Image 1 (tube, rainbow, N blue to C red):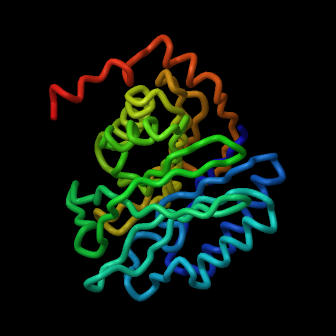
Image 2: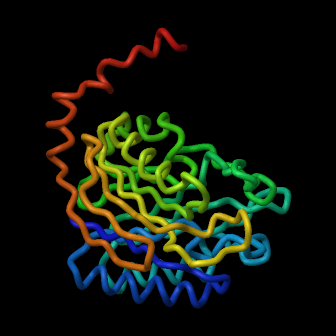
Length: 263
């Protein structure tokens, strides 16, 4: 399966960001990608007041993404913000395109490294998977990468890969952690992990996670197959679906689990 990771930098204006999504989706479709994955906060970058711009999944911004997917014949996965109770929002991934209509609200909120996402964002409570041309893929967002249970849940539900959208925070050691965690989650669950982050904007407002780039695709054996640097760039890559079964025959970490011991 050919997919594309769109490592771009979004700003505070949802309409301008939607035009970027259209431009990059057309580039991905021209390169033969069946799915194109955009970062977390594609609708508007962090550091922007989220509640005033949040829209429901049947709102104009999400409909704009649907139209882009329809016009290009691709599945588009993009981060947006939807209204939630108590004046907060949900950090939502919209996945839409031919035969696909799903959304995922980020389960694990980034209350770490001096940032408190939970002050403005409500957590999700369910996993989400999509089927693209018969290939099952899980959805995950940024800080989720620190929690192996989610990726194993994707594998248990039949996924051969996880699409991970991020706006990774900068700081000492953060790039090393990003690469290590993405590789570990692929190896934990023996799935492909296609991880796309916001490109490095150069400067950012303090602890707000605005992105460091370095999107990467990791095979089910934990090895890096493709990777980008810090700048905006489109990565088009192939996921070998059959490799997942071959790796699971050799590395039986899913079959060898002992859930009865841990409860």
